[in-house]
Image (cartoon, rainbow, N blue to C red):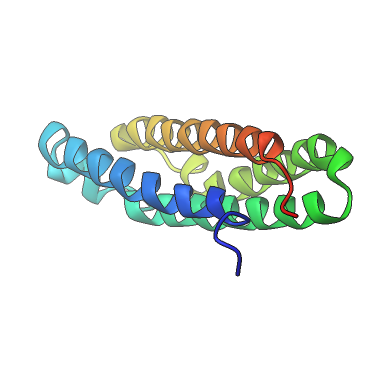
Length: 134
């Protein structure tokens, strides 16, 4: 396994734990424990869901870069669209609930979604700008 080839995935595994820890600490000290206990998904579960999707997307993009590098942008758009759909399906149980904590949970999910979308765009641009190995 070439370290340079998978550098974007290593970078993802460096950034996500720090962001997840900060997010959990913010909830630990900024939101009441009862509100957090009413969440359908724990914060670490949402981070794990998006981390798995991001790793799959980046692995697929690395594979595409090896075979058809001119198609990376198009494939990225298709994969992000699939991620949108999977995120919506993942969020359906939250959308069907009612209560005061549901609003906070929806905002929380959206924030995590935006964090991962930003990371994926940033890491994909790094993947595009890397020179191929010889």
